[in-house]
Image 1 (cartoon, rainbow, N blue to C red):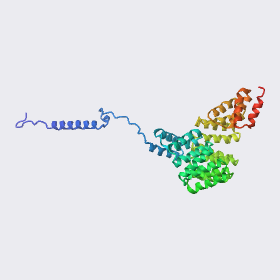
Image 2: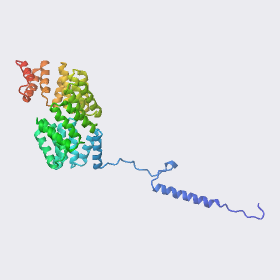
Image 3: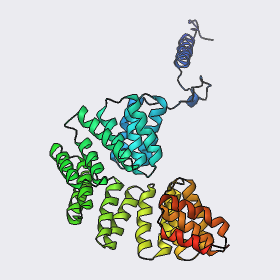
Amino acid sequence: MYIGTTPRRSRRWPWLLLLVLLLALALWYLRSQDFDLGFLGLPGRERPTPTPTEISVKERMVLADRFFDQGKISEAIAEYRRVTELDPSNSTAHARLGRLLTLRGRYKEGLRAAQRAVEINSEDVENQAILGMVLDWNGDYDAAMEACLKAIDLDPNDATAYAYLAEVYADKGRLDRALQTADKAVSLDGSNVYAYRNRGYVLERLGDYEGAILEYIEAIALQPNLAYLYLSLGRTYRALGDYEGAIDEFMKATVVDPDDPTSHDSLGQVYYTQQEYEQAIAQFRKAAAADPEFANAYGHLGWCYYVQRRYEDAIPQFEKAISLGATAIEFYYELGLSYVYIGDCEQARPWLERALEIDPYAEPALQGLRSCEGQ
């Protein structure tokens, strides 16, 4: 015992109790604020799984335009299409979707989209101009001219409308007027890619291939991510007999836009012309793989098999092309002749007759029918 003193009660307990209380309050607060307490080994309130935020229609349009500028055509098509689904009244999305589908060789689908844009807003310059371009690529030149002139009436200074009108004039064979209109487009906007591309197209139709090449090169400098500009340039080299130059440009198109079936198809046609059939077949197959609805790829595959006398291989390719809407008369009479050469005139006659509906003087079709007389 301690003589002369009284033992003191320890003062540590009140402080420990206060500390525990403060800690409990802190944990309660953290839980109430949805803090994750897993690092303490304590159960916390489970957080909801985050979900991606849906971007607005306006943001999707900006994204689609950016994809187009970058040459990401598949992505741009997907975004424009998504905009039309989310906002069916967005005429600009319909119009730009129609243009890109047309550049990809999906002419009928592109036409439906471009027409829908004008149905929604017929007073929009871009809508009318794009409809003119799409109608022209669908071969409806009179309606294309009407749409382009309507666009110019809406805005007499719209360079793109003049550029598309120049292409229509060229396709109608009014080449002098086409050149004047193309010059007008360039004078209105010296940085308009369509103005230079279509001036090149007019010069190409005039037989001024060297001049056309310069215009196409200028267009590519303005927008190096558009495959159809390289296709235009390659086509001009091909017309000059410069197959190496054509192949180089078509190859660039396949690099710029690997998903574009028209690029692979154009490259395949050069190989076909040079009788390099295996390389041609490889490119036509790539075109079909890029877009299984691209009719010409199957017809051109049929060409390759036909000239190699692989008639049984050619037949399903021609039939596939025609079923998808291909209209080239060669597909019809070469399909008919393929049946003739395997001894099946019953199957041959309908195709040969359909070829004659397109051109009553198509000599290969007439020869095929003569071969089947008496059978």
